[in-house]
Length: 416
Ligand code: EPZ
Image (cartoon, rainbow, N blue to C red; front, side, top):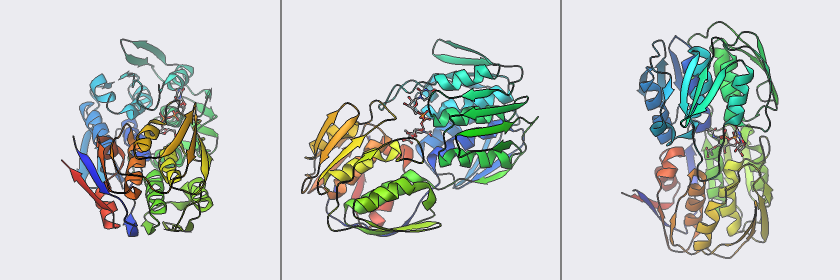
């Protein structure tokens, strides 16, 4: 397994480009299942999770052509509306094929994703919504089995805000007979990006980005081209790395308006942030000020940025209180940060982080995607060497991470 070796102490300075958003690309690739005509997506990031999903779609009978960041998918000859366990277990977001397959084929068998390091990750809302649209859903032998002659429009109220739940049901509703209203819908920018892609394919959707989405079903969707939005979590991760290292960086190809809550926190921590429509510049102070935060659904502070911000608070002036309200077990990075000398106390879903002068390099282990990013940030500022093991987690969500960091002046290299 690959490892990342980081020599701490370098300031991040310079400019780098942000890739397409993983969490927009994954549902958008699944949207290809809804049409019998080819669709082409650009700015698709070259990530492990994207490769896994393309392999899954390929084995369903989708013809796939990939040229760098451009992917063309042709789902005219779907043969196998099944997502098997061995593929789903490596990438939970495979559940996003459920809605499109139910709508397009009237049948689907998708392995239950199962939990992951950060929580149980149930999909009851996805199932409840499809049942409300008239589907017969059975959960047996670890698979969700959906059957529906034709889905019917319905009024759906989510028990809690769910990003992929909203996306799955929105996709299913595009081909349903009648109007579907999704209430308590997720407002994440990735939901809006998916809606824009579906609209380009002929779907009739309004309200995406608000908590009530209105979808009028149509008989079929046609081909289209869509450019995937920039990755706001990758953007936030580099901003946190620059902030922690006292750096001065400019990120291009970004969507600054999708990161207001994170930018506000970075300013509260003492950074100067200058946002342009498609670029962001951050200048860090010599010493950061601790900034408390509470994760919540968009537009509040994103849970996917919590671990990165905890690393930043480890070496800030003062004490920060971090509350994680989305996932039940998303502090796995804390014990690894403690190995680097961080002063963190966990009390249920609250972490108290007392800033210290300097972290010490050590060997640490990545447990999930964003926790890994948090350890990278800590390694960049720790004294001496930090060796991060199991960095396959990083490769799932960050494109060419060590190259981009090295180009910004970090002393980092991958050890095969
Ligand atoms: C999406 O996961 C993202 N993944 C996650 O990013 C992100 O952390 C999460 O949204 C929250 O923003 C993708 O978009 C591919 P949820 P998702 O359904 O949709 C509970 C990353 O690092 N819930 O919004 O799976 C759930 O347990 C990943 O890129 C139910 O109880 O998250 C959680 O507590 C990690 N029943 C809360 O809702 C359901 O049916 C929010 O989960 C669905 C969700």
